[in-house]
Length: 350
Image (tube, rainbow, N blue to C red; front, side, top):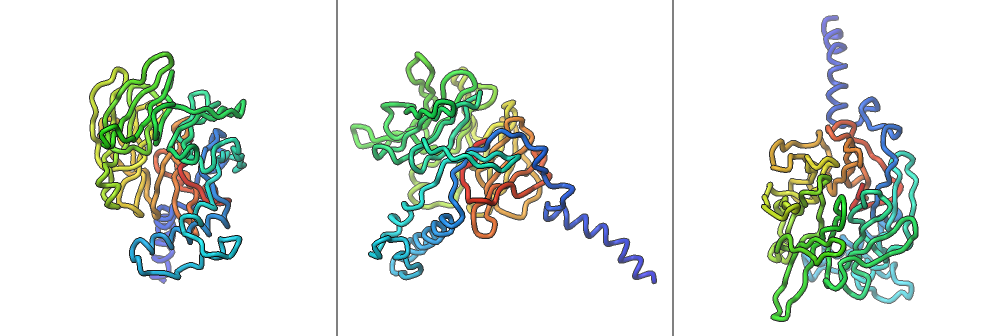
């Protein structure tokens, strides 16, 4: 009798432990009714296209590991003529669609005006304009502004050659990163600020930067630069997050390894991913690097975090049933929940 009672007493403790470990109990999950309705911009692939793309990527990765390895995937199924198809050409058949996801209703809006395969970068303060990047126009990496009211798409940072990333400032202008070859054949990598009526201002001479975030205070930008050695060697070493003063232009501070840094709306916190490739988790820290802590427990790899406009929630991308899905949790790390599984997504911007 004693043993039965003891086990019954332990049962609630066990259930509570499992709830915390899985972050999946209904009482703790983020309820869609509590989420803001501000749209999340993403790159999106329909589920079937995402599966085909996943298989092609697996073939490419297998080929890069062993050039003699062939026949892992029959790529003829992706060629309408039945001819042998190059893996990269096959992958190009399934470009991302730029889309908006309403986190409360899960409604999806496709932005067909955007260049093919466009990647979202930054929302304007009034959320009427979306900065996007594409390498499908004139053979260069370029950034554009999509006006959601008029549907117009305009080139940003004209004359700067290959522009990899950018972020709107709170008030006027934007920051962007470029990578180009100079007349001497040397690679030049820069981070600049563009403001209306002023010449572009050099913020830093850095390595390749594929993501920049402007702080809500307007005083800092954050980025995670990769040097050419890291890019060419397929290094698993993470870049170091840098915070740069921009108003006025001043000191830069390295805060430690991480990816995809984003600011909280008040500019006081940075949320980012860290760990090692394939095993990432979300963290937050103050802009001086203090207060570094994981955002809740996790049972999956968490990449490409983004913060809600009210600063209360964090979304991220993780594998679920073999495809990249959108998850959400509260800023304090509670309520980890699958937000959208209607399609595969990458690069959320909230």
